[in-house]
Length: 600
Image (tube, rainbow, N blue to C red; front, side, top):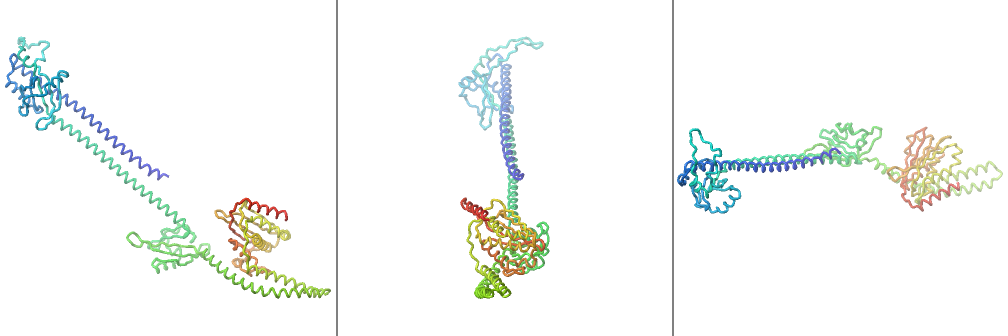
């Protein structure tokens, strides 16, 4: 699904943004650290050069002012004070190798004696110079440089003399002797550099904060978008689920707005009206169901429960429906329209008709049984007297013929009475697993002479490997015989009877269809063929199809008839399948079939 991939891909940008922000933060941190380290190195180089300049200035002043005499303390103090007035210079201190202060500027805050001289001397002997970060009394950080004082460390190697001057060798001994154990300490202020360093750190932190804010904003945006898509997907799934649920309903569902126009309609409701759902949307409910329904909704204030109505189907038939309605309201309780639930009552009506028919037939059967019982006794007497007269009237052909006709008519009437008793007091079927193809083949064998006599062709189309059904073999054979005889009598000659046997797909039923090319049944008589004593034949009793209907119902099945005059009639019998797959039972059924075939 493309949508699913789209939702899943939202996690990738979020992880990418987090990784990018972390990477940039690390890069900024490393870059800032390297820049600070580089700036610190440059700062120290600059401070070292500045301290070297101050040191050279002190040494030059000592050489210029006191070349051959020991320096004067006041003169040294004045030189140091002059040099310490520079803004970047915090202090200048001269001291000897015992820590005694020779001169300092400014004097405020300068200790009387330097106590860490021995350790400084060790470091000076190793490195020639000591640098360290210190703090003065006000708390300001300084960079201190300590080195030996060497007034005569610089000499003119070329011995250059200016024009008009005489070369004079300086007297180095007193100053050089004085300066042998002297050290100079120069402290330089770090305020401007620290301020620049703090600005760099603040800038780096600001950039990191901006990145974090931008990353957090991007993540929040991704989170919002992701939640939007998740909600959208949930709504889409819920919509799909609801639509499938509504479309799969066995009942019709329609929603209408306040103007009584159809907003939504499911497939089942469209089938009731005989139109596609898209053609019904937007139409008034009165256009689909008539004005009576709209009036009914208004009278009942959109609340209806189980109201029976009928709708006209485009095929011409009227469909009975049960209507229930309830109002639709929004979150504020305001009326939005109504929802209609339509339930098909055709099956219920059919069941009600079957119940009424069963009650009517039961009453008729009880009446017929009483009448048949009363008729059968006199018939026996009449038949006995008729046979007596046949024997007494031998040689008198005319009278004997009358007596023979009486016997035959009594026998025919007795058969009618027997059918009446069979219909009135049906036997409970003795069910056993049987293959319908065997029962049909047996019935056809019994009618084979009459079929051959009338020249009727029989086509058999049986589905292979059908499971057996639980049935009474004799009763089903009687039902099939009655249907085949009915088809045979409706064919004038040279017609065809087609028998099909197949399993109903997706249902545990088997269907037997017996179709003929006979005269057919008029449409007005089609609904009466299974009623007792109804017959279109001149000599029919009207009990054959009624008995067939009774046998099929006693087996839990159903029978239907289709017919067109001049084309033919088709009877369809559906029976429940027996799913018993026991090998021994099937084997007995197959053996029974083979025995019947051999006997025939």
